[in-house]
Length: 277
Image 1: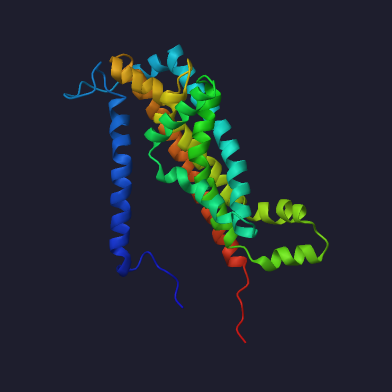
Image 2: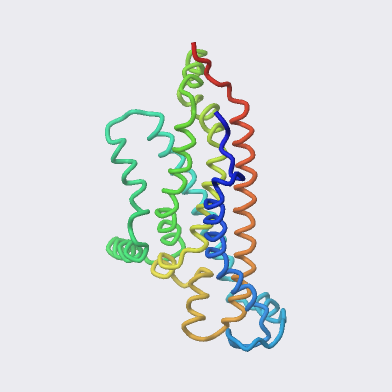
């Protein structure tokens, strides 16, 4: 069987669709990046020349830097929590058989089907009912709820591709299930864990609705940017800082996907094929 060749003429339409999708996805970011260098107090035409003054203002804005710091803390905690819970759930759903396995999978993926605005209101009402005031902790909880499904899907997909014979061989050699999970399954799903953690970080860092409803007196960067748009204040500096952070995050995500993709490709090449009798 010949390999799937993306460069063949048959897949020109697929490549065209891919690049159109990339253009639509990142063109707004490029436009924002261009206007972050606009030498004007207003985001619009006519163009009045290039300037880096808004980046200088952003670097000296305590409110912007505090919001950025808050977003980094929340996104990091969310990535850690989501990776641990999502990986455990993904491995359990794929590699074990127990009552309620289907229900666990449905509950784990349910946040993907719920509008974030409705989920934010529901979580806020829940916290208020329990007497919990909005804070960074409530934001982390809310972000973890929507980030766990991404990790769960990635890890479950990777775990499902593993051969059960490897685990059986480990148990035959005297390994306990805990050793199988720690020394066999987790190393095998490491690429999915890395991608899942980076994805969870980005999902948290970019989230607005949950942050807006669940944050206290420490707004995240999206909330700060949204408030500046509403009030008409600090829009260019916030735009400059948001552009710089977006470029860094997108670069990290692309590098992660490339490195992990190469790792998976090498792994697939080393897997022995089953010989038919």
